[in-house]
Length: 291
Image 1 (cartoon, rainbow, N blue to C red):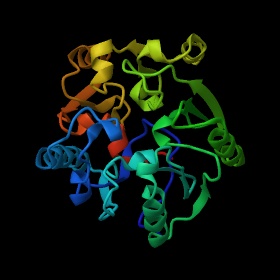
Image 2: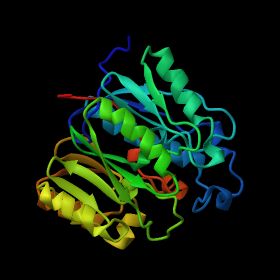
Image 3: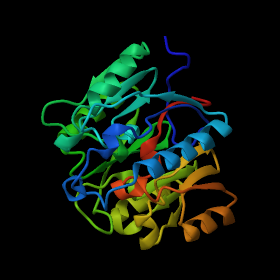
Image 4: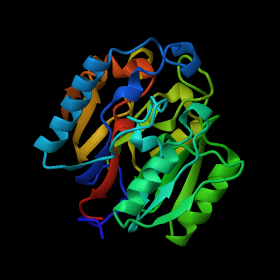
């Protein structure tokens, strides 16, 4: 059995164990950033420094770090471990990546889970597409799932069936896209929980019905400005309620959070951000306290 109880039913409960993957040689395999929908070619050395700063921040807060290990050539986005799977009630659910260039990441995560004696409850298959960057826990009985090109109706149907086993509701959230919409955005890039009753949102990207649902649940939302959405402000890693890691450069968002009593640590991800990913995607939570 793994040296922890794999259990997640929150995005904000105290983070105790997490899985990461530091960018390796596979990160330099990309020669045409447009083919990967990247905003340029990141410098590997600097990306590694940024990733290590994130890990240092996690470890300094007492989070036990687990590492996925080396990636095969071509899997340049392997650093975004959270996109591939999520933990629930003692086991792992593995998604099915939309882009063919990311195929193979599912097998790596499955092999790691098996090696840790962590059961894999379900792997999204067939025509289903499901990327876990689209998953945000609203509370311990509700998951919001973004529907876009990266997560389709069949993928959501399969995940809904799994969640029903554990008494968890799934709220489907159509995503209108980021400020540079390709249809491939993740919900975490436009919405994220910071505390049990506080969230960051880029409101232009989600339906008003979803904003109304949050309000009805007593969840206050902080609207992230357009520029800071592009800096991945909503893609935060919550260490415990009211304490979050936020991408550097998001001054308005950080100020708004601090005015509400949230402790914020900023992490520079200028190079990693060229891959159009945020902090949350770099960390796959394995255990949160109180779960």
